[in-house]
Length: 169
View 1 (spheres, rainbow, N blue to C red):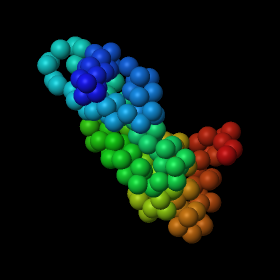
View 2: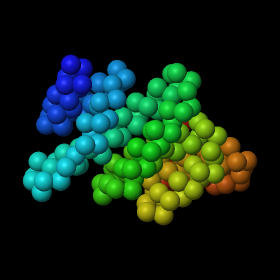
View 3: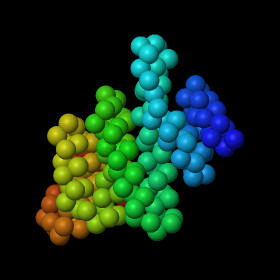
View 4: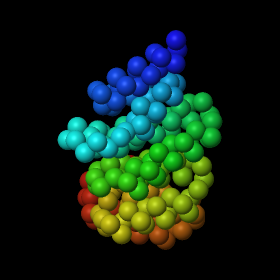
């Protein structure tokens, strides 16, 4: 009976495409929320295009939940799932804001895992596309700090405050 119920919930979530519902289900630990987001068949319809767009937001939301679960449970293995989901959105999405959100969260994961070089290269990747990407500038500064690149930290700070004069963290 549980399998039937899960199937019905997956179908309902797919039809509704409700990111908040996916977020609630996943926060409760239901793996079916992720399954509902990942199972998306291209039927060429307008509805599919909308669902596909929503899928990236939903994947980001689930990755964000996993990130916070990893912190609260002190379980670094959960960062891996979050990283995979974020990479998928970065690789597949054409939407700049979706990618930026994923880059920023992924950078925070790298900082938490002490993968400072990965964070640095990630921020550089984003800054090649947009030299004024605030999140990427801050992550580059932070990764440089942990890599003991002191002069670069100072240079990054000056760059950030020139682009964003009211910046204070």
